[in-house]
Picture 1 (cartoon, rainbow, N blue to C red):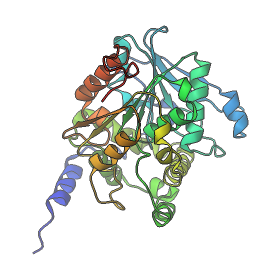
Picture 2 (spheres, rainbow, N blue to C red; picture 1 turned 30 degrees about the horizontal axis):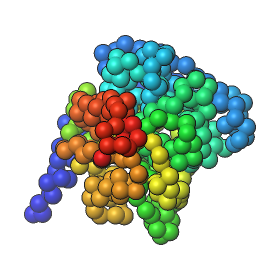
Picture 3 (tube, rainbow, N blue to C red; picture 1 turned 60 degrees about the vertical axis):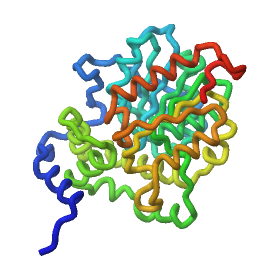
Picture 4 (cartoon, rainbow, N blue to C red; picture 1 turned 45 degrees about the vertical axis):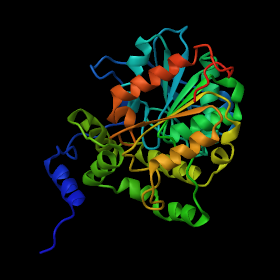
Length: 349
């Protein structure tokens, strides 16, 4: 009799013991509940970005959805989510940093969450960076600190390269953008990552993709991640969401703009990641260690600091929220301390 590998056995057990959400009512993106962990609703609104709409010939009703918390005169922190997610992935950060006096702004990028999902948007990180810039300008959020996760980290880097005078600092959370992909590997993404793959993934596949790929330790209070994704599959906008995901992946893999221009990033930068990240480097293409990828970023960004959180996964802001928040808070406080080495204020080793 063949022995089941331990990891496969663990996944089978996890799925067998997990609650099922397949029989629950369909959830529409517009009905997602954006609230703090204790259930307090966040202040939400949607904005039109005319320059972005004109640049990409977007429908006139295209809007970007945001949550805004904290004092309006506080230092702006703009939270940018990663691939396949939405602003709720910052659930354990928004109230925390608003309580510390920051003006907290979290957005759903176009194609995700409650924002519009136009087919004509290119879904490159350069276009997303332009979106974030116009959003900040519209909100009069001068010199924001950008906090990006995964794809959101690459978007924040693209912003810093294109608009270096328009931000104060970067917090890159398990960021994409440091890893190189060959032409053959890019072709693999085109062949494998399709809208059909996203639309036809069953509940067990969703749970495995979310729980195993993004977390070192799955908890019961994270079940909403699986529930919402399963219920959204039947929503009216899910096809448009799946298309945005595919276009985003192709944009990430086919563009070395960020990787080739890291030396142009002038903003003080924190790179923070988990040592149990199962998505960076790409597990199908690049066997190796996450630390090597993140070290490449640290070594090529002039004013960057690298922090590794042990036993934390790719979505470390959800996986290890307390330690993540402590490290980010310490970095933010350091930005305004006078330098004792003659380097610019906020510079870190």
